[in-house]
Length: 380
Image (cartoon, rainbow, N blue to C red; front, top):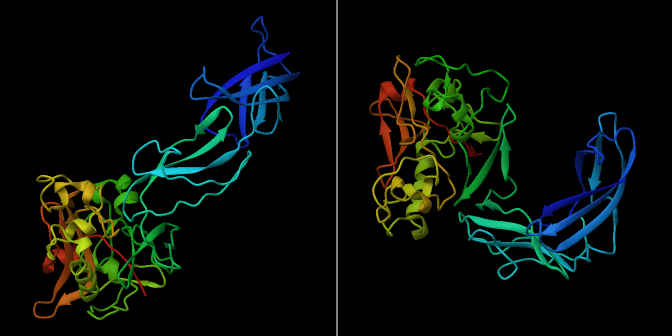
């Protein structure tokens, strides 16, 4: 008994499992029997050219189920013309092809590795594998990604919980590219989930009171949680590990100023070549409400032009007041620092707003000490 299986694929096969229930001409299950299987891969559609054919034998179980490993059979002569070239192609437009940028990585079937070169930071690219034989060129699934410049030697950092964060090198500083979302300090001590604010008890909070937002926006933390017993300071570096993983620290106000100055002094990070308009360079292309029109320099005016620096800030908002209110979700990103303003003993916070083109330090004693805001860690 021979079972014909037609598969529509867009790439030369690697080995992968396929299962099917086998029935005979009377629609009865074929159980505990050996069957022959012919597998064909066609280009483009079910009526496309045959680019690969193999045969196998398989044994069904008591339920008529057979399992085969596609790519592990015998290639037949009536299909499967040899792959003469393979690689990947990429473009800033969807569905890239070999008529544009592409690599050439040998021939034949099986796994291979390609290098994608000449990319621009913070530009979205589309990439897919291809394989060429006498029947033509077939393509694999299209994937998209946005390259950034990770810190040399430290592309990621992992916290106590096992969360892994991408990094980004901006000037001389190595930053986490994501908001902190840990539930423990580096020594394993837990950080409780809060339902109210406190000046003394460390708490973490969900952005917009929704646990599902933590993965994309991180937790919000009050100052007690962030500092973990350390004293306020405004040095470079701050020297305050606080809530950050080992080898990383909570930035001081002065360290944020280093970041701001670097962006302001490099035109590619400014909007309309105005040194004050750097908010868009810090803000991500998602996680913000829209505001204004594309010709303006507000974070929300054209999200697609954000994030030139790769810092990828998102509007996680804040958790404030004893009535457990989360405000400014997708409207503001507010980051803790280790610094208080000595003249007033107020906590300094860096704020980005979807309605603004610049960044600002805000100080408010009641809100900044007890309320929940975002945390970005800086490499020691």
